[in-house]
Image: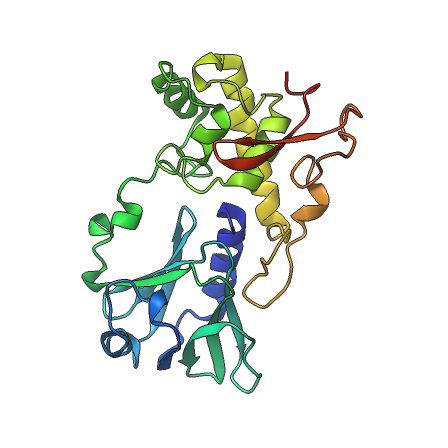
Length: 277
């Protein structure tokens, strides 16, 4: 699933490519994509309108429409949001197309069809259940080490694995399976450790690892480990930096021990038992 770095990469692309563009047509090939809207109402709310901004919250893109409405886009497991010339033949699994006023299209391609679009009338994001209970943004300027330590301390009575806590979007927004494995390895914390056992010095290491790894992943335009590409179909290059994710049964790049893979919090988890005792 695209995580914070991948969604932020797409957001930055779209901010340059589609802001100030007018939507001249909307074609919906899969009704499953629209949450709470009929295709007719969806088209009515967007055709002829201009995109005036592109934001992000956690793993969700937010397109600002000049009507005051906001369009939420969640890529889920395999969604791609591609900016392509209208003359280019659509790829298989293209389920929604926005025709733009410059001869390009914004196409949503999703092999598994888990992704979705929600039009929030009046832009009342505070009423959107998708956003209501999300935790803080880990890269926000005002999200400090002290804030993160306070989040960890608030879990002091919990026996949940730290990996599961990092995946919990109400705890911290945007971190998913891949980056949870990478930051825990960088912080030298075993993914199965109860969050209640994390000491302040370890929480500090984890905070720094989260900020550094997510920032570098954005700079390298995300990780193309599976289906992810950016808004122009280009792969991300952070896959070259992965230390543990997808590398089970290979030597740890830090110590040489063989990396392991187990299920933690219901997800495949890659780690080094030597580095992450």
